[in-house]
Amino acid sequence: MAKKEFLLTSEGFLDLETELNELKNVRRPKVIEAIKDARSQGDLSENADYDAARAEQAEVEGRIKELEYMLENAKIIQKESGHIVGLGSTVTISYVDDDDTEVYSIVGSMEADPFENKISNESPLGKAIIGKKQGDEIEVASPTGSYKIKIEKVD
Image (cartoon, rainbow, N blue to C red; front, side):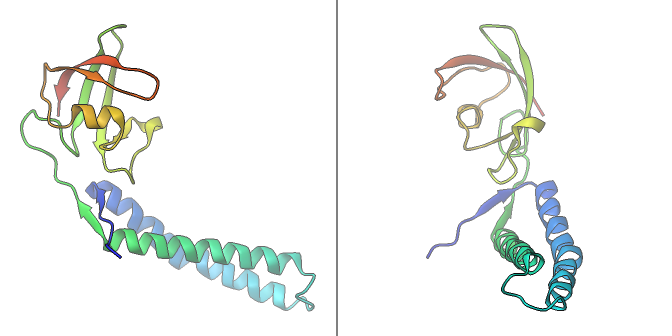
C-alpha cells in the first residue's frame, strides 16, 4: 500500500505534535486510571463506567495511531517566494460581482479550517488560485456555480 503524504505548514505540524503529546501524556493515563477504577467496582458485564472508559480508550488510541501516521508521513510545505500563490501563501481576494474582500491562507487539506480562513489547496478556490499572481482575475468553478475573483495581494 502506498503511503499518503500529508502536506502541512510548520505551524500545523507543531499543532499535531502538541495534540499527540497531550493524548499520550495526559488523556491516555487518565483513561487507564478510569479503567482501573471501573474494574475495582466488580462485575464488568453490567458496568457502564467500564464500558465508557474502554470506548474512550479506543478513541484515544485510534487518534494516537492516526496522528503518528500523519506526522511520520508529513511533508512540511515551504512558502512560495515572490507574488505567486502557493501552499503557505496568504492571499487577499476580491469577489468581482459583489466587491467583497476576503483574506485566506492556503494550507494542506489536513489543516483546512474555513472558520479561520484556512483553505485547502484541494478546494475549488485553492485549486483555482494556486500558481496565479497578484492582479489576476480568475473564474472559480464550485459545486454551487462559478464566480469570478481577483487576486489583490499575495503574502
